[in-house]
Image (cartoon, rainbow, N blue to C red; front, top):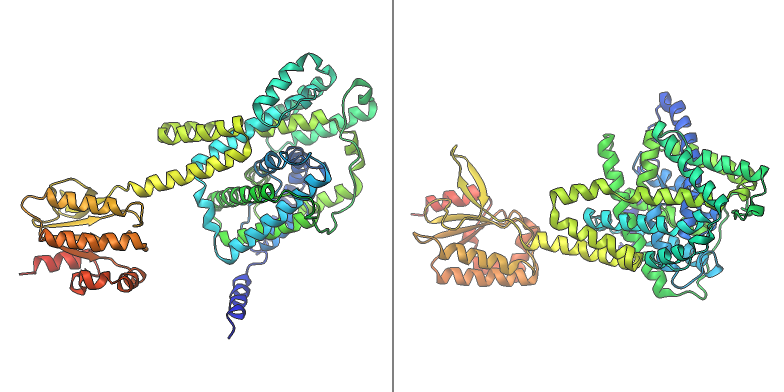
Length: 566
């Protein structure tokens, strides 16, 4: 049978049971609570995604579109009962921070690139599902992500100061924007500033009273009413202007006149953050709410949500931590509430977009300003400083990179720092020696020179996967242990239970280690060798060098063999 046909059949089998995992089975007793939660979510999400559209440099309607089709697609294909998909501040800021370097926000070239970013992110996510690459998100460390999002939050808040004060500011990155803002501060429009302050107070006060109160919606409705009764334009207050009505329709993004390097960079940056943030959020809420989760199904749902976002005139969507928390607070316990939200938003875009044209830009700027501040994760930064001071420095480096050099460099530094953390943990593992403790039980302890498992015997465990970067460390440590053994060591048992596989460099090191130990009259014994690892040893010829008589299934078998060797 053709391999392509087999692969398609495998994918089809993986799709069985996938549809509506986050919705089914329906609990009839939950219908009314889910209905109410969906309406509350719509009331909060609509002004929020309008703010995200502003962060992304996109027309307001494109933000609203993110909570119609993309949200509904994830309900069909995702597995999480709680993860909410839609526009998110992190990916919106990444997209804007990179695309703005080559195109004017809101221009045809800019919007075309934004649609393509969503579409191509979707393609990458679907490929990640096909090849089960959801684990990629694990390589963006929590430390780097906290620093990155905090920096993005600061940058987002700074970017809104001009609009909140009624000023025109220049610059893309934070420092030029601040300087431009300060130089034009004398031209502040007091009416615009009053609207901004009023919106901030409404949202903050209602949030303090009860998080379920849609403070942003109240502020939006209130300022639209004021704009209707008073001619804000005569006061120098700028308005959002015309917003198209109707549900989104299918379109094909244009590839003409685009900067493909910038497009590729944006797609890769958004792809990494989408997986990292979405998977982390779905995991957190599956544990919190005791639900089952299939991360790869969620990756598929995110992929098709983004493809449809790009094909329906919207921008990149993400598994949003803020929206998910809002949904849980509103009482949502399944994706039924999400479908209700999408239905409510459809009604809004068909019948109620005209009043939005009267919305002051200062209202959206104030909402976005608060969204940015909420991204500043002081709690997590304090926890990192308290628990891992060295990693706190890396988080601050990431944060400062975003603020001073921009989102693109922030993404690059985040990935580099994540890789450094991964390498540092795998390169310097805390290895162990097996001894009998005070109770006479076997226990692993950190390596201490001169300590034996039994006289003439040491069981040594290397507590990480073995690969080119740490192979030399294993050999040096083993040789050091042998040289510091008095009386002389007879057997060294290498417990390889921590190895899932080895690379070429590691195999060559093991061959060399075997030769060196033979010269020192020490028998090298290996235990807990998984079948896949054994096959690698056989292919490489290491098994012949080691000798099958020096391979044991478990540590106890090897110890017994040592004790009965004479």
